Amino acid sequence: MGFGSQIPVWVEPALDGNIARIKKLLPELADKELLALSAAGINIDQAEIALSELEVPEAFSLYEAFWVRQTQLSDKPYIAIAIYKKD
View 1 (cartoon, rainbow, N blue to C red):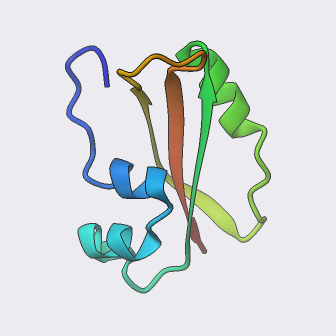
View 2: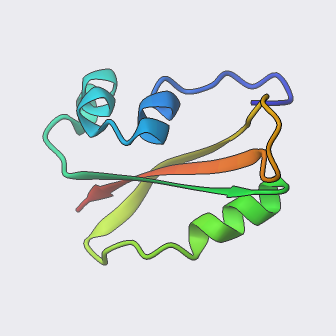
View 3: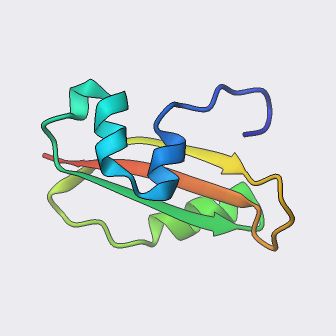
């Protein structure tokens, strides 16, 4: 993550699709059905737009979102990540 922000503990497991780990790190979500989505872009705006275009089942609402910049060379170095919880 750029600009000196602290990366939330759930980001890495969300990128890996590890829902069980997210639930361990965020106990308030332990009994919830979760969905972790991510999308990449050439800049943060493009990554966030790509994320917003992903289909999220109607029963889920956004819990938290964040973005990171990959340090390795990539044509789309920015990644927007979001966790959704089932209401």
